[in-house]
Length: 138
Image 1 (cartoon, rainbow, N blue to C red):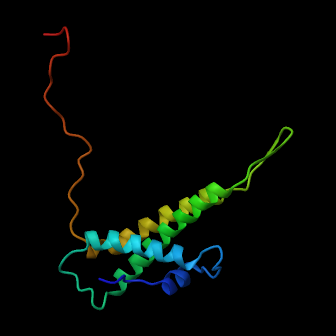
Image 2: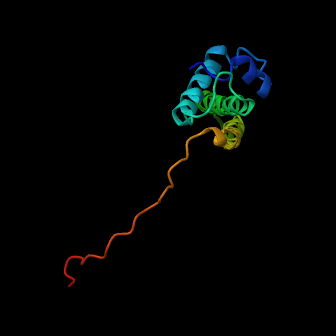
Image 3: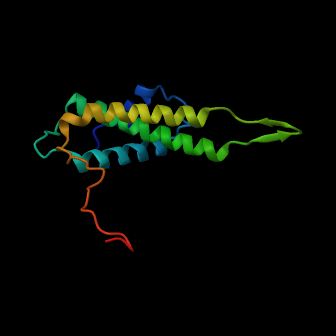
């Protein structure tokens, strides 16, 4: 099944007009990852031809979140920290801002996608087991 979103929708949603900083190949990879994750969890009863607006919006947001994470990783590798005497000069908080934006966008994406997804099994953080004697105890 083809992706529900496309490069134009992602660029428009996030106002990404710089094709050097955000090349098409990066957006296409984010869209592919987002679509694979959505398709894996998509309820079989959902009509995808044509996809509903919520499904398109959710996948667009999810692709944007993955794109922001890619940009944050790129920024982390390209930052140059300069040390002049006792002064430490950094590039700024781009990495933190991009990862925060990615987390917020992903949360919104899954909220929009929730009606189209299979019911997720309840998460149990840990199961309790019966008590057992420890070495030297009765």
